[in-house]
Image (cartoon, rainbow, N blue to C red):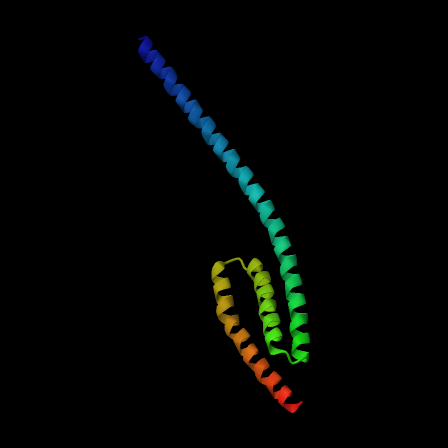
Length: 128
């Protein structure tokens, strides 16, 4: 009888231990989700400000390079501005598939902008 009684006590202890482990896992999950959401907000704010600054500085650099008829510098500025704009857009998009569509829709536009700018800069240099 004692062995059966000890076995029953062990079963109750195991169930209590599993219940406390489950409660600890739920608490850990809640804490980590709150922490990750607050870190995500902080990271998104930092990335937005960094991407916005990158976009503004790169666009100004591209405009000045275009005015100076320096295509290689213009190309660097345009691509850097595109990266900043993409970072801002990607942080605002709720679905990764929309990011995929963003790259499909805008990648060709950047290439066309580079080709048109190259043609215009070449034509302006020929006139000078």
